[in-house]
Image 1 (spheres, rainbow, N blue to C red):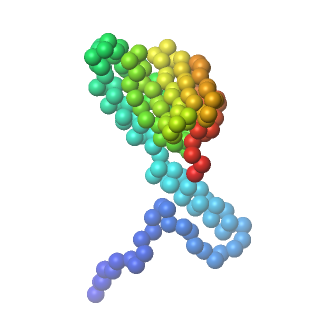
Image 2: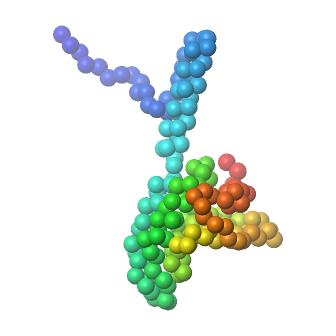
Image 3: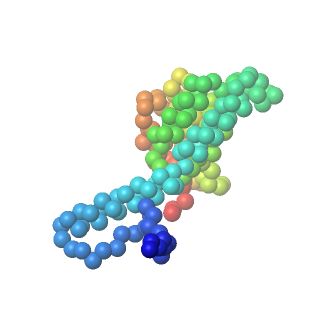
Length: 166
């Protein structure tokens, strides 16, 4: 006779490894398991697909000229692609930005942590990244950087500077 039973404990990718094994091979295996757990946790909390979907939605909603009733330029396919590619390149440990349409036809990524702690970045069709922010009382940072397939260090540093400590 065959009896089907339910396991008393479900093992998921985030379940900690428990072992009493010792030795080099056991340490290596424990390290690999830890790496897999960290990667699964990162994938489970990765905000980038959510922001990219929001960019897709904004591009569709703002694809015609004058989408705001005040003469805004349409968001082109290239502006959408540049913004999504930029999001892909952002470190996953940064806080999730809000994606908002700009009247100049770009999509801005905005981080807002309250008074004097805001930062905004937008990637133009031409590949120029424009940014501006308040990084604390009296500290302003703004400028432009070329977008060459990476995120300029100053942008990541600025976002981390205003982010709440986790």
